[in-house]
Length: 258
Image (cartoon, rainbow, N blue to C red):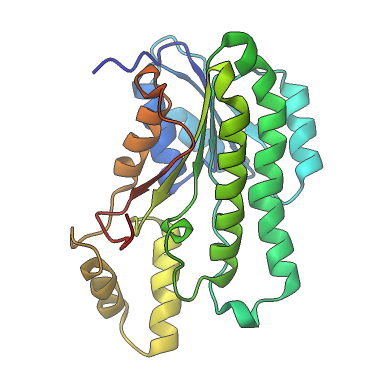
């Protein structure tokens, strides 16, 4: 299937590791011009060097997503224009929602929803001019089914999903789609952190917790970051032009709801 992503300009957030990195590489393989954005310059340089390049224009931007105004300034200074935006930010620390501090909600809301909004407001005018835009938010299956021990994350992910659906309704007439990809348990550093914390709290071994999580999915395994990336890249393509305002779980069937 020809995805027609050659010469499309793509901005991938959180692209120095995990799903973000896998997504950036896959876009580059499809011929897109990829711009990475994260806060660690050394890691950005490393990933940039790994991107396939066939006369493409790859780049990176440095921004701290705990500072929306700084992010806005970075975008304005770059003067770059994008057809595709991948919103992807590491999740909040785990723990029961009752024990969460107010500051944890504020930090997560800023990193996820506020910065997503800054990015959209900066990028959508060009998408409207091109009559082509793809905004894809990497969230979590907690949008459909809250996950135990991830109280703050469940709350903020739900807010992002509602923001996204509202945006999809407003931008659809301009050839811009807004969709959410909901990864399940995916083999990333974030998952390893969750397993370690759960093992510590339950007194079980890392391997025991890991196996239990794998068995919660009909696939009986974790996803590879590349599998989530494949869904993201398809949604960014011309072929997905009539898919808008939806949540797509990439979880091996773990989510119980339809």
